[in-house]
Image 1: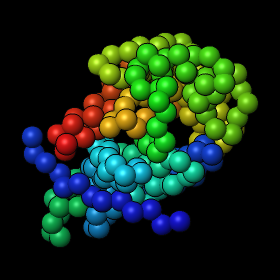
Image 2: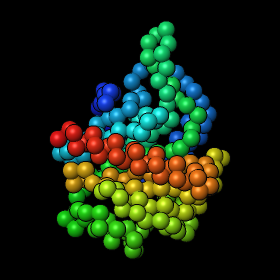
Image 3: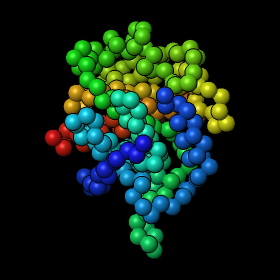
Image 4: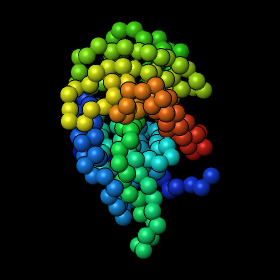
Length: 220
């Protein structure tokens, strides 16, 4: 299925199987020069009748080739990148993978889930807690931290993923928030178990979510 994404010009001021392929592909690709606009900093996508904007954090780009449309949702993958001045002009290059970031826009709206408090109620009891899980695994899920901060709902989760050649950390972050009534879920994982690494990852996913919220607020 072809997914139409619109590139947002840069301004001056289900799922786990796909992630396995993403991780393996990016680790093999290293720094690859890209002269086409397939690695923009931001894109817009259609969710029902709404057009939403997803804006990557600093040092990352949206890889449009990895975008996927599922039943009732759209998932984007965000990867490490760097802009470099060359004889051919400004180009975007992939960088070695430091983290795996995703953004999933959920198309449907529920009259019972319209606030952060209602999300907490939904996601901390069964069956809603299953939405926090990695895909393609029945491993025990443990929530280490829940924090509500500036319209963002953070979860630090520990769960062993499937055995793959590229071993991700068992710890990952999820953040949930609302944009024009739509729920957006973002994930961030990397390859280190350390507490310092978890704090960096939380800051990164917080920037990802905040950039997206601000862009959509300014676009109204």
